[in-house]
Length: 220
Image (cartoon, rainbow, N blue to C red; front, side):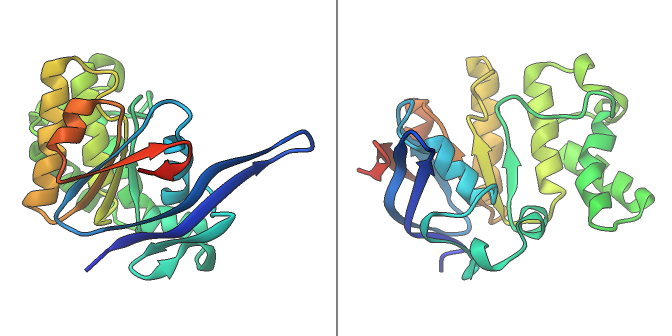
């Protein structure tokens, strides 16, 4: 049973000077417990597709469906809080918050009390393979691989079963890339998350349960 679906999704960038059809009738389904890769060269439509899946915009035509609900029929801020979590290439951690505070942030937005959020943050930090001493460190005190693990822990704090990862290993060396991919793979296979990675890394694409390839806005 699909937890996330794209149904005939088309997206058009329109200005007074030009009309660009960035996506052209994309249809695919995503199931829980699996890791997916979306691949394509620059300009293929990957970024646009991720933006629509993340609820930053709605399709010009077609639907993005989360548990059967279209993003066009739900408040997009609520959708981003409750239905998807995004992990970015550049980590997007708040520099003036500690690792613990970064992980706690989405939980507190959802109304969790600080004490419970701090306890849960410690659990999630351990889950992504970091020592508890990480909790009191600021992002600048962490390596790139450690920052990405904190970003994953923060995403897990959102209690959504769909994780979108935008080039999650793009700023990491090969060893850290493998470690981050393994964490995401385990979250899918062991914890039942639906993990969707947008990447240009062919090695990661080959290791995914299923790979979708984009070219000129179309699935091939």
